[in-house]
Image (cartoon, rainbow, N blue to C red):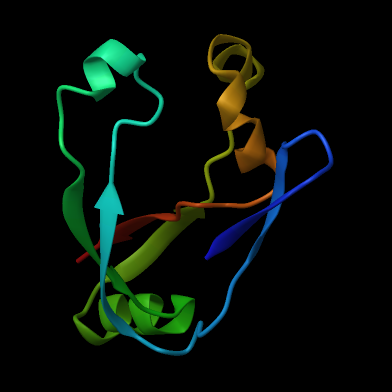
Length: 103
C-alpha cells in the first residue's frame, strides 16, 4: 500500500496492489511522529502483519463457527481530528475493520 498525496502533501487515498496475495508482510517502523530528540533514541524495528482478503477473514470466522454480529470500519471523530490532525487521511481510506462475533 502506498499513500497518494495532493499538492499540499495531504494523504487523500492509497494505491493498493497485490491485494489477492495473502501472507506475512514484514514492515520496518519508526517513531516518525515523535520529536526528533525522542525519535533518535530508538532504532527502526520490524513488525510482522498478515494480509488476507476481506473474504478470507470473514470466511475464516464463519468456518470456525462464529456468527458475525456487527462490522465497523472506524473513522475519526471531529474531536479526534481536532486533537490529531494527521488522522484526516483516515476520512478517505478505512485502515481497520472491527468484527464483533459470537460463538
